Length: 448
Image 1 (cartoon, one colour):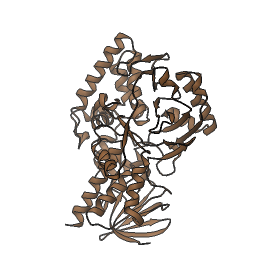
Image 2 (image 1 turned 90 degrees about the horizontal axis):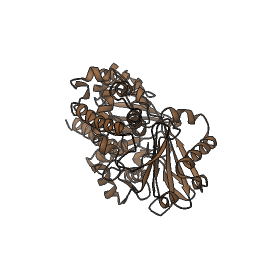
Image 3 (image 1 turned 180 degrees about the vertical axis):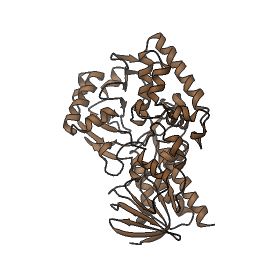
Image 4 (image 1 turned 45 degrees about the vertical axis):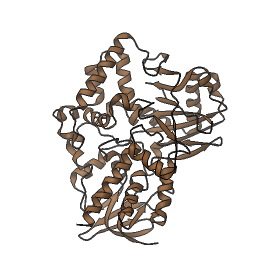
């Protein structure tokens, strides 16, 4: 195995693989070191009752240009997310059927919901993409949580519950755990509330035939022996001329390194000399959102026959979001998400107990036929050994103190991950864009 290259990329998720592919296209020798025994990072394939299931990142938004282009280049087709029929909605303890485009709420709550969107649009328009910590009200907004803002600005229980659903459904985190400034920047970078929550033409527009992880697998296949699996990076030492990367499989050397893992998990790597205080502080203060994603297979999509979309959105229940995932080959599947505090609670139960609770919830939403699945599988992302969660988030006073370090190189070490992207952060699109950015940062330095 070659032990030296111009650039070592740490992590074979979407960001790291895209960075490596960009660098090889630019004529740079690369080695990709992956701790896990698979590529794909936060994308992951499973098989349930003979059907392919995505138990990690899955959807491609209508405006995810880089991801769509990459899939097209690799010959991977898309198919539309099903979005017909009524949605099951539970915001204040009562389960109701709602049209997907107009939530069933009291009139005052609907008025507040419209006002909510205007307020968020107004505030996020003042947040600069490249430097959100310089927004005019950055200090004020970063000092409060999203929950603080919700309680101060919304009066109806339904509108408050809907606002909380946005953070839990999107980033698997409670509103009380993230700063309002970080939330605004994340919302801005994902096209605003309407696009962010949308199916047709929105963030959940389509899926890939054969699943999402195959994009990473095909990128890795193109890179060939440059990708080294089951090789956790333990320490990175940098000097005037290059870096030495210490792994469980020995040492690797390079002129530069791209660390393509989220800031939280990156703190498990020892850096010598010590990272600058802002970057180290960021590693300590960007926890991963907690999520368990379950795939449940049935003999047929009975919910469609009942005029339901297969979508459910709840606050305060064990499941936050449920989505129809009838596959391109006709396999009837529902996806169920436990997020935030509910994911942490359910993680302690074990898979069999989780299965019982999730099936019980699906029966409540969709009727007794939901209690007769052909197969069940879930992935507890809170205990994934190398990612430890879903998406990195920022609590109060993190963005204004440490946010500037997200993309700043530390000597010969550059950073990539969806969290570092100025657009589509938290999405696979953001991961790919971060890989492109980091690759071109390194390319400019190697040629200077």
